[in-house]
Length: 210
Image (cartoon, rainbow, N blue to C red; front, side, top):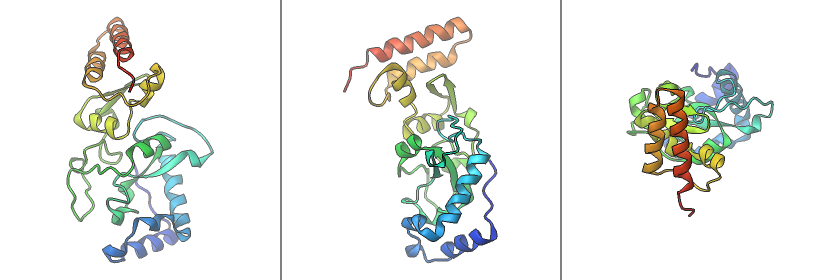
């Protein structure tokens, strides 16, 4: 993904923030009125760059209503406000993924310098990872194919699509469910895939409501 390049006017605002002392770099600065042009450029850039596709659930929502998209800080502002305007820390996500992820820390370590490699993150990073290397989708069933994919599923609650499809309330984070999805991933023919999908459906039906 191509990171945002700030306009000269917006770069002045970004540089002013990054020149502050660490104790002055507060997460709430993001919401200041004078930062609105920067927020707008970030959202416009990543909506176009990602072609209206959420970096976490991979769902495309083509709409002129930008309120349906959130400017996403991969490392949250609450965890490291100093990376608030770092282009490689930014993307867009759908509202549901953004809410599910919240302020969870997705780093494997916490260096002072911005962590700029894949190894620093426990979820699939939109700038440093290839999504397809970590997650596959079978319709509304999310199938993680790496540990990062599994962590992304948990952090962003990607089983919510399957839960909605099958009329199940709550989260589908369960070893038995993961095993059935694994069988679906290994299917080599359409018949095997259909059988595995049926097994997933049967398994979910047996999950007790909580």
